[in-house]
Amino acid sequence: MDAVDRRLLAELQADARLSYNELSRRVSLSAPAVAERVRRLEADGVISGYHAHVDPTRAGLPITALVQIQCYGPRCLLRDPEVATWPEVLQLHRVTGGACCVLLVAVPTMAEFEALCDRLGAYGQPSSSMILSSPVPWRPLAPR
Image 1 (spheres, rainbow, N blue to C red):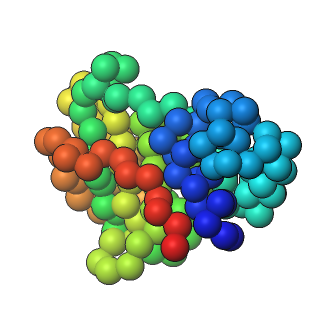
Image 2 (image 1 turned 180 degrees about the vertical axis):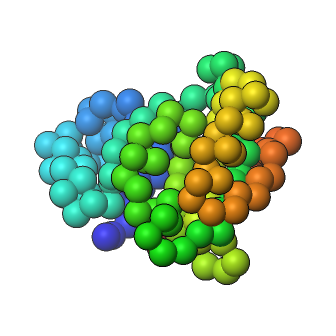
């Protein structure tokens, strides 16, 4: 990756809807050259997708939490591919330390959060932390 690729990544992270023409103006390359670089970054897995940032509260999911699960062995949450399809699970991370994994979850009500915790209890001991606010909800990567 060179300086132009880093500038392209910065522009796309700020606004992934930019056209190749606009990107070309911003990084001082031709549109075909920009398109080729973006395709290469996609093929190399540097750009893994494009998406919209959605505010969970405004989308009807005001309760967000981080849930740690202490599990191990055949009933480990990470061994069940079905968990990745649960609509409440926004992210699932395998971690080090006392917990096996950490989930970022969002639900519309406390009753649904309680039901989710009960489901997670089948895999191990869940421990949750409610998210009160997110001073840094998302930050673009600054490739080095």
